[in-house]
Image (cartoon, rainbow over all chains, first blue to last red):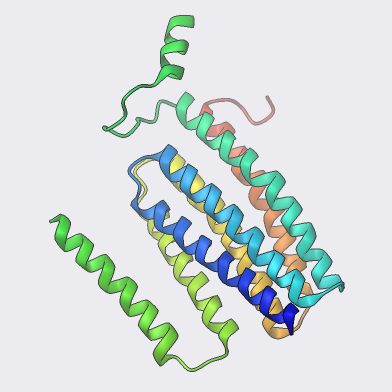
Length: 112
Length: 112
């Protein structure tokens, strides 16, 4: 009984974070802002969802595959997000018009 | 113009939530899968509309993370174990694809 309740609560938290992250992906003005919102919220949301599925299933093959999925998402998603943001900044994709300062671009211009 | 866009978005979100949680008769897990499908719809809006190519790459990456969670829920609903295998393979392929696209966007070659 307590396992059912805890797993359902984790699944609800995961679905909620997924939805909020995707809302940030639609609403925010810039590539980098969208990347920040989407990556944090979707990673946490999907990890919570898989943790809820693991709690519901218990120590079966399905549950261990869910744990493996949590480990893989935690390892791979920040790496992909960092690569995409670095490539976007190197590829001169413009920032939002409300941006105040961009020190990384200033450093690169001073170096080259 | 801004008020009209806010109104359209709130009406769409309210209609989806009302139809999903109060009209549609199904088990709870099916309704949660529906919420995840709505999130995928918003991500597809960003894929189609996105101003730059980094937006599209990032949105496809986030779509992969969403599909992992959705496949875990679907496997929980049908009580089949092989959905989690599909989720793990999807995570691996999505990670490699987003890294490769980030390299292309940065202007380097694949075998660099």
